[in-house]
Amino acid sequence: MALKSSVERAQRATGGFACAKKHIVIQYGDKEQPEAFLLDLIRRDILARGIKDADVMELDVYIKPEEGAVFYVLNKEIQGRVAF
Image (tube, rainbow, N blue to C red; front, top):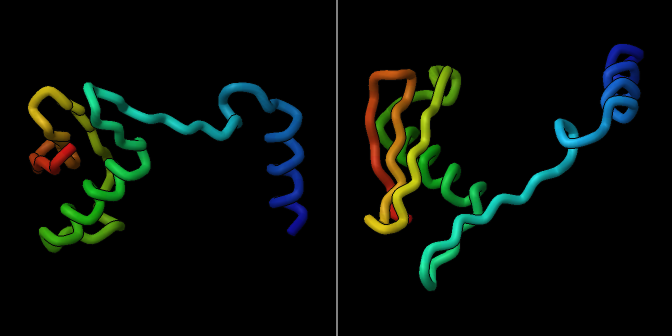
């Protein structure tokens, strides 16, 4: 319990941009999608492929709203696509 309190105190002390809550929304034309929604779509797609959450080490995301797609590369080897 003491360790958790120390970490929380340190985060409050440093504060600023790194610790701030962030809400990112991607807009293109008349479409708008929050970052969290797109990441959830990617996560569902990954799980539907039979990949376990614990196996996800790195995720690169490429948002291409002009194509109506969000592309991703999982662990530098598995490619996927979800709708924007």
